[in-house]
Length: 298
View 1: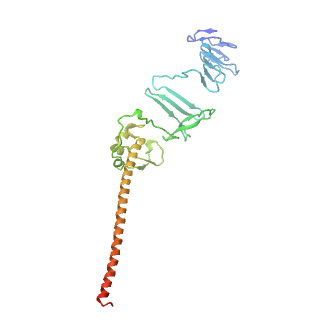
View 2 (view 1 turned 90 degrees about the horizontal axis):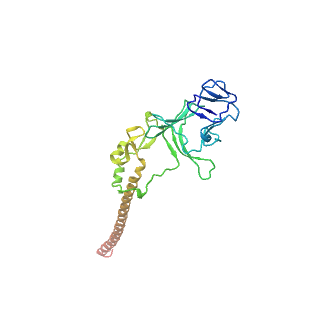
View 3 (view 1 turned 90 degrees about the vertical axis):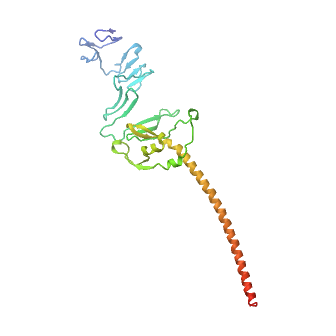
């Protein structure tokens, strides 16, 4: 047991050195030149380090760290605690994931208002993305990718549902004059400018400033580019589209009714014309008979 001895008030229990060596202020196990307050090296699988009460922090010879377990699985950090890791700092506490083989880093950053997920790249990276995976019941650790956010901001997934329960809504009214409003909008094809750093494929959509004059409820004066850069709630077009289609359907039904009436009127006129033609034919016969009678039967 080694306690204190200029080790910043850290208490070690059952510290065994074979042999125990040091340089006056540092203690070690397996090295004659300790570089820190405690320096343990070795190749024997028994070179494990257990710190704190009941070995709640455990480091084995493979570099795996266990918190609350003395048998960490094949990972760098294995914990049974509810709070596994806390990262603090005066500004922008950051958790960095680094792939040393490609010098690629990804970060999770807290700015005090929210979390930023930053997917980094390197000189040869061509397909950076952020992906969410889930496992189905009894899948035996065979997860399926459900959502991917590509480097150009494209979302790819299977489906999305927006909450729409009537119990959470009030002031519900139908969209009035939907067809006339839709007729004021343009559906456009466009490409993003290079500074937008979006996909370079041709896109279909609308112009936020144009939508704002017709449906201001669907336009926000903020976006991922900051305040003043407008964004459009595309899903909100569903309501006016539905009402516009219903208006069109009413117009079509009216035209159908008018068309049927015209057909009936036309049929009546055709019958009347046919009757008139028959009457005319009868008159021609009578005229011919009169001519013959006037000529003495000749």
